[in-house]
Image 1 (cartoon, rainbow, N blue to C red):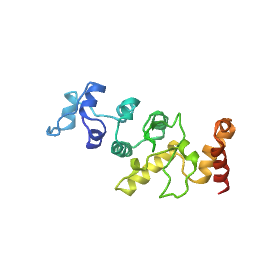
Image 2: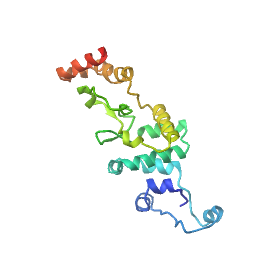
Image 3: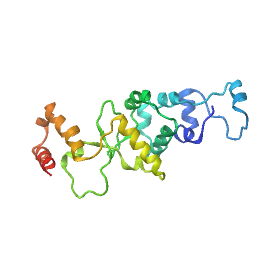
Image 4: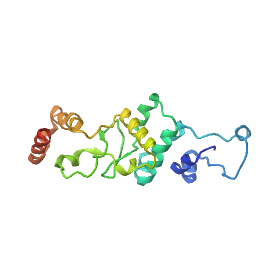
Length: 193
């Protein structure tokens, strides 16, 4: 298969064999793409990647740095709006709790910015993306990932977003009744602050 280094960083040859029954060609092979195509060598595509990422149990075992490489690969694949529903359904977002979640079944928030001296008990109920998965040396790549994630539905950690997308829904769906007195007080305090 034709592939750039980013694909190799995200999908190892062993995983490629396991999932697709194919393997990468050696980097030492120097040939025109047209000749390799005639020999049956194919490119890995965005669709191949999406199919691969549907394996949620495999994704759970990935290390933090792997997510950086995945997000960089997604940036290089020129993800289009028509890909958004697929991306939302994939469990490709690692939280600070170590869980790997999708956006179709979960509300996700960007990491809290900087060191915060104020913490509310209900923050434990919020799915914050692990900040280490968004650490890039290239600021442009960081900004493009933030933009993509925002378009996919990841919420900012502003008070207004947390109130609107976490606190208010607990009152609308009635789940606040199951919250501890401390959490309910924290909600009021957070809104007041």
